[in-house]
Every structure is written in structure tokens, then in C-alpha cells.
Image (cartoon, rainbow, N blue to C red; front, side, top):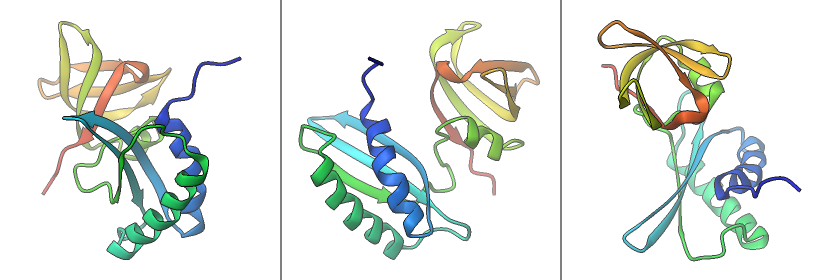
Amino acid sequence: MGAAQSVEDKVREIAAPIAASLGLELAGVEFTSGHGARILRVYIDKPGGVTVDDCSEVSRELSAALDVEDPIPQRYTLEVSSPGLDRLLFGEKDFIRFTGRKVRIKTKAPMEGRKNFHAVINGVGNGCVLVTDVDGKDCEIPLANIEKARLEVEL
């Protein structure tokens, strides 16, 4: 028997087909807790951006599906939104998609004495994100060591 599936993975399996049926892409899922509140954030996207109606529709359909599947035993608040300009990056496909863009990466374990990187994405290879940091130094950050990654807003 394999490892227990995370809440994010369970919700991703439920939400992806719902988003696809509405012509949307599931950009990511985040389950956070803080100050006694649990929040399930589901990010959707489509070319040209998502509308409030898109978010409402996904929220209605996903809420009904989550009530049936019940992947989260405790109380939580469901939020459905667009990823925004400073979107979170959720995996290899996002790093590939946003190659050439500036990103802030926080690692789970320190690398070269630090956990925070402000860099440009050069690509993905061998399970690592290839970046050049603001000091011009090339780094390979293992995908498995990335706690959080967010695009920088470029105006």
C-alpha cells in the first residue's frame, strides 16, 4: 500500500475534471491552517484570465463534489480564485511554462546556507529547477525541496 495521499492531491483529483468540464485549467490547490481556520484554496486559469462567474461556477460544483467525497474531515473554508500576477508555481509544468520569468523560491531545507532565492527560471532538468539568482549565480534547486515558489510581478 502506498503513502497516504495529501489533502491537496485528493482535492486536485476531484477539482481537475470539474475545471476541465468548464473549459478551465486547475492551476493549483493549497490547504492552509492558521489561527484556528482552515482554508482550501483552489486556483483556476484560462487564456485571457478567469471571471468571477468562472470562480462561482467552480466553487458551486466543487463544493457539491467535496461534500460527497469528503476528503477533509475537519471544517474549512473553500476559496476559488485566479492565480493572479504573482501566482504560486505548483510543479514542474509551471516552472517549464514560466521559463524566463523572475521567481521567488523558498526551500524546505537550506541550500548553500539559505532557504530563499530570488531568481530567473532557466528551465527544468533531472528533477531540479535551473535558475540564475539576482547575483548572477546559477543554481539547481530540487523540485522536492521547494516549499513555495511564486512569480514576481513584472510591470
